Length: 452
Image (cartoon, rainbow, N blue to C red; front, side, top):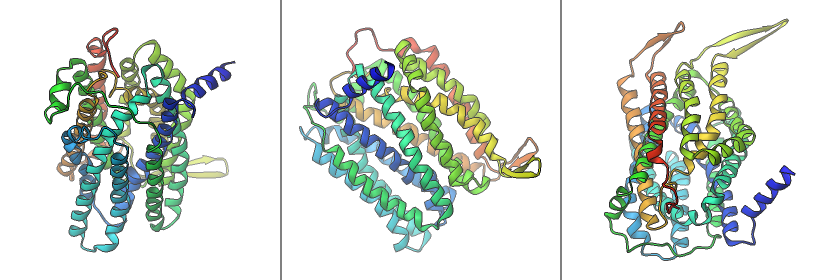
């Protein structure tokens, strides 16, 4: 009976008869493909791609920093997008240009340029240009796609989307990670060209949903991106949480990826097994967290689940190289030291991540009114990317200042600042929890308030 009911809800939410439901089907396909593309063109795959061309930790940080710097030009997107009552072809062209430059362009450059400084300069320029196209596409699609996600189906849609992202992308990453560990560097290059093919598929699916008029009070001005949202106090308080959360994620992520691969010696296969485990956890606990959202609120679920993550993040800073031997009678197994610690940290984080990731997806819309969405979505992109930008800048500076830093814990001397940076992120997560729980009444939408 429960299965039948769930199938009924799924068929009602996703089908090809109703235009909005058809739009949600396309969004599901897009989100799954985009999630996989994000994994294999950024993060640890991107780090390994750059390491194969001897890009150092500072260069890796700079190249991860550039897209968020380019995102600040989102100020210009409302004025540009308002000139197009129908935007599907403009957005598709921008998204295709992004994939072409970011995936194919960055892959070809090392084969064309040998000098390291020149190569890094060109990679920064291509990354910046591709990110400009993505800024336009992201802002435009956000204002378009919210049309297919009314409040009554949003929690369900986001839960299904997150599950498919984690499960399907996890399987694909698991296979790709194993191949990266066992094949030569050419496979990473081949993987990036495969990513471009998937990007073309994504663009095609983004052309299918119907497009309706975008409601605006008046033609947006350049200043509207700031002046309109800033008058919405609840929206601005939500943006503070968004900024701090993005800062906490990006202040250590690229440094930790480099540290895990270069210093700890973690394999791509193990790393991607950990990523893959998020899918089964999401399948098991997505309904648990969705019901908590429906019974309480998006903000409370975000804070409570993050409270589980924060102490584990501090513990994550103690990951280190080395191994130990496990004697099982006549069998002796040599196991890397990072295996039990990473499992101890990441498995409970997967349980909690199901909650805070689902809740965070709605932060863009939770206090957004129905009008002037271009201005609101552009402002959200500014805050989202500014938090990421500030976090990455902090991480780069912190890493440079702690190159010769060392501390001893549990009989091992850590000779880099990356572990400490990872721990500081956990402290910041505790601060975010306190801000949300203490100020929750000022964050929650007013009863009966108009919002997206």
